[in-house]
Length: 290
Length: 240
Image (cartoon, rainbow over all chains, first blue to last red; front, top):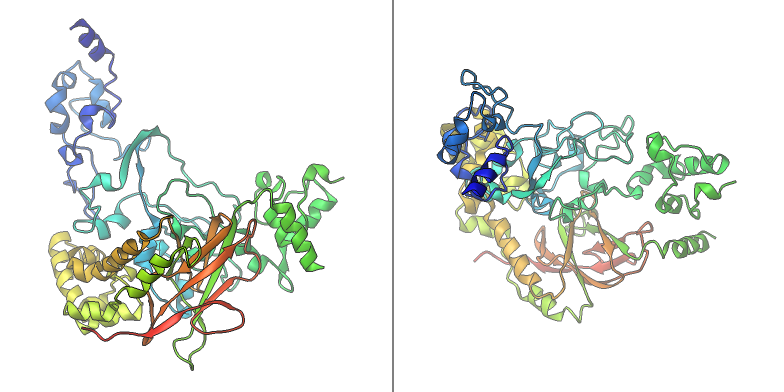
């Protein structure tokens, strides 16, 4: 009895975990789909109501003037204030990973298209489906990743599994983690909407991201653009020799940083063997250059 | 000189790159008068083993009945406007195109789903963008699901997991991280092209350290000295 009392007294009720056994029930036990105050489209935009917590946590709800349990959802713990954190709280660690099979989604969005529409492909304002349904342009350089359910529920709302109420179809409980805010970029100077006057970079996404159509999961997904995707234009006889030129510059000065595509930190490393292969030269390490 | 250098480079790379890459390029002709064009956005499969080792699978591929998209939707009594909308984009489901306002009016199935969506979601924009959520599941993606079931059933014949990739708009696709050896390249389900359906089942060798920086492995429905894999064409069967 004393032990139970001690255990309860050391539990940090300001830290909510979906991994707690009693929190592992059906999602709809607490989360209402959609939330009462959805605006642009039906979505889960708010925390569960008090009823979801109070059934089990009545004693924690009425513990002192500022019960720690309130701070899970409320930015101010006061009976006179119901202001809550944004849902989900961006400052909290993530408790779920997302299961997203790119291969299946590539299959269903696949369609024939004509070369005349090519320029439309990478732009958010387009009239047919491709990767930009979910990955709209964030800036001229970067594509965005989905941050809400808008690009999920338009298909998976109610009859296409996993439907909106089947949270577990996409969200898998995981050890708490802090998600990266942006993907790691090797060729940070690449501009998705660039490529000169003809906007040659505005291709179909899978022409360069060659492994996306086989990816059944987000796990292990990595930047998968092979150097050949770049050198079709950037290292071709009679066109440009951007790779060969920079490799030649390393020959003259081993401290040379390749900055045509890379930031200095990446551009100061040894060039990978694939780059030397493209330039039809044997690979070299900077330390071996005199 | 160039060949010798390439060989030297490959030898240098061998210890670091035990796997290989297969770059395929699929180019087809709908008929003799048509130009060769890249076969865009079609899924191809790579199955470890020789054709002989995969004989049971190849036999199953050849035995499977082909239900065309037109036949599938005609059997469902889908409107000609919907069948045409799918055909224009060579779509296997309604998800492959955004349903624009003009098609909400022109395609009866979309019109009915849009009316239901208006009631459910209020605003016209959400109702249009979410129109597929109120379509009958068979109309929505029944054909695609049937194809996936057929593919899954066929793949059960293979003892080793198959790899798959989809071609891009030029008909190019890459299989990466391949263990060296012999594979069967197949599309499993025949690809409709004009009045014919094409099946590809070819043996491919993947060499250690091959990064596919040279010419791609050419796949076509027409014979040519450069084409490594020629498909077998059959007339599209009539609808039952």
